[in-house]
Length: 115
Image (cartoon, rainbow, N blue to C red):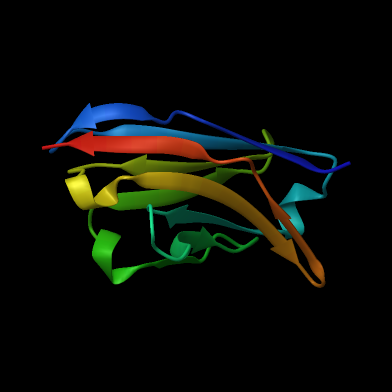
């Protein structure tokens, strides 16, 4: 069974940084597009950033210039480096793996940014 396990969330002050990690198992990692999504209370889940198997990246306008997504295919891990965090970045962050009809999600990790 495919597993995506997120880590690295927590509480940080505005202006601070966090690095999220998502470790995948039981998938051919390098062919999957990997993404980070987030969901704040009362809001829909939204794409934060994604990265293709060839490492092409895409970012939501709200995080461009502050967040960086990367992947290590040897470790089957995708990262999200979050800098200059704002209170509006507070949400549960989810890891996603997608290829063809296959679509997997992690359990989520909470990120809370205090003002």
